[in-house]
Image (cartoon, rainbow, N blue to C red):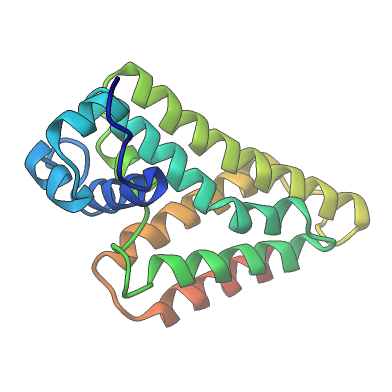
Length: 191
């Protein structure tokens, strides 16, 4: 009869997520993961199989952490207010001094040449899903008259998607969140 695992799965997964978020998939070593997760090598392999599977689970964990932010788009009654609320929460996270700067997904996108095809597909889907969430909210805003009828919503959703990832990159080198907030307001005005 095997021993019961003596660790909190979500807590250990969160610790691994933070390491991947800070260092990226390729630069993260198993030794760093084991140290951060505070579990044995055998527990790691029994629970998570290998580094790649752990990374995939970390991305899923990270996505769950961001569901509240995404809900600001899907549950918004106003397109501009939904976009503003989303980016306010996004900026709070990107510039949070107690977590790695930027975004795990953006970091993964920036290093897409490193992970395998399964990781690439998950990251690409996350990228496309956020663009689609922006598009649907803009569509809602266009139907209500909040967004002008002559606006190209696909282009605007792509602009918002890239603004999202641009903030993540900027947060890694610029600690002044005011720049990101001003950029978001400028984009909202032009919608």
